[in-house]
Image (cartoon, one colour):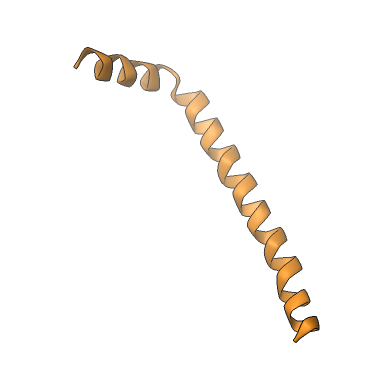
Amino acid sequence: MMALNSLFTVFTGRIEDWLLALTQHVQISLSALLAAIFISIPLGILLS
């Protein structure tokens, strides 16, 4: 139980860092998804 309490304390103490990392992760993931869409759809149309 002590480890869980310590983990919760770390997360609440560093919430700004966690939210920044989450935001960056979502931005990078969406950028990669959009790049894949913009490459694959025209390529699929061209090759069909």
